[in-house]
Structure formats: C-alpha cells, structure tokens
Amino acid sequence: MSGPAESVDIVVVGMGPGGEAVAGELAAAGLSVVGVEQRLVGGECPYFGCIPSKMLIRAGNALAEARRVPGLAGQSTVEPDFSVVARRIRQEATDNWDDAVAAKRFTDKGGRLVRGTGRLSGPHQVTVLMHDGGEATFAARLAVVLNPGTDPAVPSTPGLVGTPFWTNREALQAETAPASLLVLGGGPIGAELAQAFARFGTRVTVVARGPRLVPREEPEASELLADVFRSEGIEVLLNTNTSSVSHVPGGFTVELSSAGADSAGPSVLQLDAEKVLVATGRSSVLGTLALDAAGIAWDGSAAPAVDGHLQLTDGLYLMGDAAGAGAFTHLSMYHANIVAGHILARHTGQPDRGTTESHAVPRVTFTDPEIGAVGLTERQAREAGLNVRIGVTDLAASTRGWIHQGQGFIKLVEDADSGTLVGAASVGPSGGEVLSMLALAVHARIPVSTLKSMIYAYPTFHRAVEAALAGLP
Ligand SMILES: Cc1cc2nc3c(=O)[nH]c(=O)nc-3n(C[C@H](O)[C@H](O)[C@H](O)COP(=O)(O)OP(=O)(O)OC[C@H]3O[C@@H](n4cnc5c(N)ncnc54)[C@H](O)[C@@H]3O)c2cc1C
Ligand SMILES: NC(=O)c1ccc[n+]([C@@H]2O[C@H](COP(=O)([O-])OP(=O)(O)OC[C@H]3O[C@@H](n4cnc5c(N)ncnc54)[C@H](O)[C@@H]3O)[C@@H](O)[C@H]2O)c1
Image 1 (tube, protein in one colour):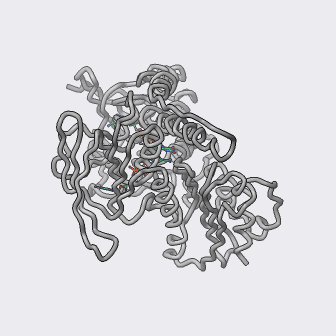
Image 2 (cartoon, rainbow, N blue to C red; image 1 turned 90 degrees about the vertical axis):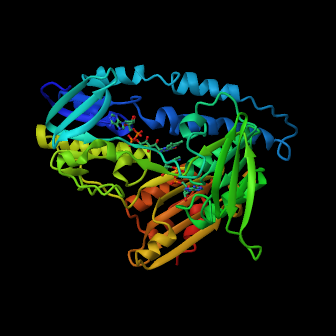
C-alpha cells in the first residue's frame, strides 16, 4: 500500500534519452527530482535501439566494404565472425544491459532514482509500483513529465504470440547470427537489421505488408533500397501478409499470402527460418499511465494533444516517442530542451527556450546506402497544397559518386511561392551526413537563390546538392 504522498518538485516517468535529460538538468539546477524507471535508465536507444544497432551496422558495413576490394584494389577474403560485434555490443555499448553508470550519472546530479512502474494518481501526482512490490506516491509541486516511450508492436498473426520470436530487443542481444531470418516489416528497424544480419551471412527475407520498403520515405529511396537488398541476396516480399506462424525447436514456419504484383494474382507461400524478427512498428504504452487521473481523455489511438511546450495540461508534460510526433532520439532530446527550459523559465526566471517546431525534423535510416531526409516528402508537400517544384540528381552522375561507385540521389522539395526548400532527401554513402546542410536549409528557410550562390567543394558527395538545385528554375 502507498503511504502519504511525498512532496517533491518534479517527477519524471520514463528515463529514456529525453526523460533522463530533463530529469538530469532540473536536478543539476537544484530542484528535487524523482526519476521513475521500470527497466533501464537511458531507455531503448542505448540498450536495444540506436547504439547497438549502429554498432552492428558499422560491423556489417565493414564486411561489405571488404567485399568491394575486388574491382577496386585487388583480392579480399572475408570471414564474418558475429561474436566480435556481439561482444562489442555487450561490453562497450550496453555494459551487459546494466544501467548502473547511467543511474549514477543521474544521481550524481542530485536526482533520486525510483525503480518501478509509475502511473498518474492525480493531476500532479505519481504512484510508483516498485520492483520490491511496495508502492510510493509523489506529489509534484512544479511538474510531472511523462516520457514512457513505446513497446514493439506485435501483430495478431495466428500462432505468433507464444513463439520465441525476436523484436529489436532480442535481435540486439543475439550472440550469433542465425542461419536464416524472416523479418516482418520493412520500416527502419526491419531494413537496418535485415541488411546488417545479411552481411554476416544470414539468409534474410523481408516481408512488407505494403507496396514498398521504408514507406515514409521518398518512393525513389524505397525502390533503390529494394534493388540493393535484392542485389545483396536479401529476398524482398512486398504486398505480402503473414497468415500464420508456427515454431518447433530449431525454427519457424511462416505462411504468407502475397497480393500478386502481376496477372498471376494472389499467391500463398510457406517459408522456414531459424528466427523471425517482428519489426512492424511500435505500440503505445500510454494506457498504463492512468491519464484519466489527470482528467485527460484518451481514446487509445493517437497520442493526446499537447501545447507548444508539450503540456497536456498545466504542469503535466508528454514528450519523446510517446508524444507521437516522431520516434527519434534527437527529437526526444529536442523535447527535453523545451520542457526543461519551460519549467526553469516558470519557476526560476530563466529565459524560455521557445515552443516546438516541426517543419525541419531530420531522420536517417542507416542502411547502405543511407537514407537521410528532412521535412516534407514530395507527396506530403503536394498534399499540403504547396506550389511544389522538385530538383533531383542521381548521385552516380556526380564526380564523387562515380569515383565511389556509390548509388543514391539528392531530391529537393521546394515551395515555389516562398522560394525555399520544405523538404529534402539525401540518399547515398554518408547520406545522413550530407543531409546536414539540407536540414539547415529547411530549418532556417534559406532561399534557394542563396543555396545556388554557394560554392560546393569538389569532388564531394554534397556537391550533388548543387546539381539538384539546377533543377529548380
Ligand atoms: C532498433 C532501433 C533503432 C533505432 N535507431 C535510431 C537511430 O539510429 N536514431 C534515432 O534517432 N532513433 C533511433 N531509434 C529510436 C530511439 O530509440 C527512440 O526514439 C528513443 O529511444 C526515444 O526515447 P524516449 O525517451 O521517448 O523513449 P524510450 O527510449 O523508449 O524510453 C522510455 C523509458 O520509459 C520507461 N517507462 C515506460 N513506462 C514507464 C512507467 N510507467 N514507469 C516507469 N518507467 C516507464 C521505459 O522502461 C523506458 O526506459 C531506434 C529505435 C530502435 C528500436
Ligand atoms: N535510424 C533511425 O532513426 C531509426 C531506426 C530504427 C527505428 N527508428 C524509429 O523506430 C520506429 C519504429 O520502427 P519500425 O521499423 O518498427 O516501424 P515503422 O512503423 O516505421 O515500420 C513498420 C512497417 O511494418 C509494416 N507492417 C506492419 N504490420 C506488418 C505485418 N504484419 N507484416 C509485415 N509488415 C507489417 C508497416 O506497414 C510499416 O511499414 C520508427 O518510427 C523510427 O522512427 C528509427
């Protein structure tokens, strides 16, 4: 049973990247801060997301680059050993999935970490079911910040639940690469992990329900990625539904039905795989937070609306992936800056750091080629009713792209009425790095005429931006 509520300044529920940043900054500023975490301080990104996946991708890319030696520089023999990257992930990235260092990082700033599951028990009150079975209630004098992230979504495919399928969490704890892997979902998680495992010799099949991989990106990126995957021996099944999954020791059998891309019509096929990775999106955990205790009605679908400072109601904030504006660590950290700034402005007189802007959110899918993008896609810009002009260039037509034998493109989406870019895609080797100048252009609404007057170093990948700009009159 919970005793009387203890009064503190701030309660943060969910210590993922943004939650930890808010809690840490406010604690360092001298406020009394309780951070509630049910799993690992640091959240999905360092233990099951960005960091271990990018470590795996780095290793896979090294193998792919070594395989490119013939044709460029002689002979190479490549013998993948998954245990090397598995060890790096365990030892260097995740500390064997132990958050002691992260927890100390927070408590050293003066914060108090409470391990357990928090839920609202009033507009500014949080009750925590602690790991030891006890309960504690905290009444926040200044603010409650909800940053609970998301869980992997698991489709209701017959037979799936109860089998030892992987989500990103199990895949990134793997000690060996499976002989075969069936990936359900062709979004960023599915695409990144499919290619990385394939480069270690796993026979990979990607099953996407829709007509293309990475469907939030430009269609040209989806098409290129599918071509690259197929050229690397990854089977890509689009417009394909999973009818059933079964498991016996040693592997899975998955029954698929494809809509059929041609006159052949729908087809049914059965695939066997040692592992199945479910990467079919994320599911909200907001239902566990008892939002109604703060008078917030939530119908279980889209995240409830927040104001420009990410407040659900006065002094109650919702941020990070759970806010539904995008699932990226950089967005979570951006939110953290706004929330901490708003709380400090209200209660210590520091200047406010402004409200959220969403016109220039960057994103990078770390496949090879990397798919970087910012702002609107062409389709989104047209649907928004803008007077759209497109500038596009093939990376292979640029000097650096040709030398590198790289595949990719730059695509610019201009609002012709304002003469500024509202979106851009940078796909290619280091596409996420080339993106930075385009992110600045969209963020700062730099006139296209100014971008055209700039000097682009020769021969760089980013010089292809100049060629794409030439397509904008
Ligand atoms: C495989 C993978 C790769 C990714 N790669 C990238 C990438 O390259 N770049 C990028 O920007 N993003 C990437 N992401 C996304 C990134 O991990 C998330 O955007 C980021 O972790 C979001 O942070 P968050 O704090 O909102 O949520 P989370 O990191 O999910 O943290 C939320 C925390 O809240 C805790 N929690 C939830 N409910 C409660 C409760 N009731 N009480 C107490 N604690 C609770 C959870 O245990 C968790 O620790 C990737 C994600 C995955 C899965
Ligand atoms: N590099 C990065 O920044 C990065 C990397 C990984 C993940 N993330 C974030 O994590 C979030 C989750 O990624 P994700 O790839 O799981 O989700 P997603 O929602 O982006 O993609 C999932 C895909 O699976 C498809 N799908 C759904 N059910 C299916 C089924 N039963 N069978 C086959 N396909 C099915 C969906 O149509 C969708 O295209 C993303 O929103 C992304 O922002 C970011």
